[in-house]
Length: 290
Image (cartoon, rainbow, N blue to C red; front, side):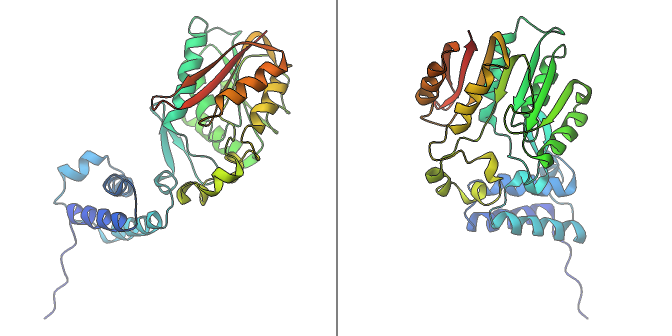
């Protein structure tokens, strides 16, 4: 008489997923396998080790193996889980928005430094190209006395950003606008922040397939030079910043000098500086409205 094999344990399933991802070339197979298994079980990663001998239910096992297969095909873990952490906040993400990166937290640090002595009802921010709303929501949480706006050309992205603002209790303090860059707003603002597209066409072709094949091209590509959005923002921001207000933009490696040059050419900015991230890469370019 044939007996059914006992269900595999969490330890066995985790090992299986790790091996499969390792073979497919994942740069972090163990971590990916842990995150996906924890996500399926709706538990934290510590649970996987504390209960490593527990049996895996059939339905959960099928869901997990399905996610492993999609990860083997290159789909980012954040999209598979439907969420990504930024500034210790959990954001809803899917393929309609760019995945928030830890490097962008450097931009938040600079805004905190520039406005640490102000947090009143007169302070106003706008996050241009908000995507998931990570910057807008984070600033609304950090500056509870400020008014925040967010713009994006994508209606779908704005829907996700609005959901994230609800998720983190700041929906009433963020106004959402649909339009290209600053086209849909008048200002004036104390600070315009943006993580705009900054990948040129040549670099885009060489990106990791997990980025190029899954994340929205419109949030990455920025023409032949990669600084076209920075140039447009520099021009538009002149009329939408209060005197003394700041334009703070994320930039790609090696773009800092060129962005500084276009800001200088506008004739409307001073105190221009470049901030590097913790990996030593040029990450943020900021300028104060004269």
